Image (cartoon, rainbow, N blue to C red; front, side, top):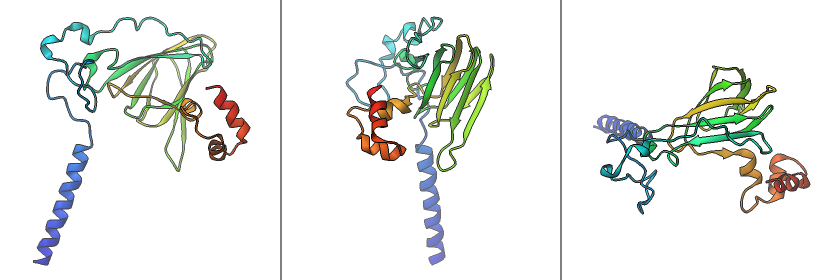
Length: 219
C-alpha cells in the first residue's frame, strides 16, 4: 500500500512538472490573426484583439524599410525595428524584424532581447558580431561576417555588432517575438531614471566613483 502511494506521488509530481513546462511556453494562436487593438482598455499579456470585421490589409502592412536609418549619433548605427507597434497584425504571431544601418566603424552596442532569439543576416559590408554566454563561464563567441552570412544571437544573451569596414554596412534581423524588447546595457546601467547610486556602480564595476559620474553624465 505504501509503495502504491509512493508511486502515485511520483506520477503526480511528474504530471505537475509536465504541465508547468507546457504552460511556460507561449501559446499558439487560436484564430487566423489577432490584430492589435490600440484603443482597447483591456490589459492583457500582449495586446487585445481588434474586431476581425474591422481588420483590413493595412493592419498587415509597413512601407519604408528600404530607407536608410539616421546613423548620425555617437555609436554610428541605427536600428529600424518593425514590431507589433509598426504592424498591428503581428500581434500573437511571434515574429518581427529590424533593419540595422552602420556608419564605417559604427557599433550596435551590447544589448539583450528579453523575449526573442535573433537571426542576423548581413546584406552589405563586413561586420563583427558576437555574444557572451551566461555566468559563470561568460564565454565570448564572435565571428567576422560578410555579405550573405547569418549569425544567431540566443534569447537573452548580451550581444553586439560592429562594422569593421571603411564603408557603410547593412543588416536585417529577424526576431522570434512580435515585441522582442531591448535592454541596452550602457543605457540601462548608466542612464537609469533616477540614477543608480554612483558608489553602488563604482563597487560593482570596481572603478573610482568619479569614473561612474563621468559616464552617467553622458547618458
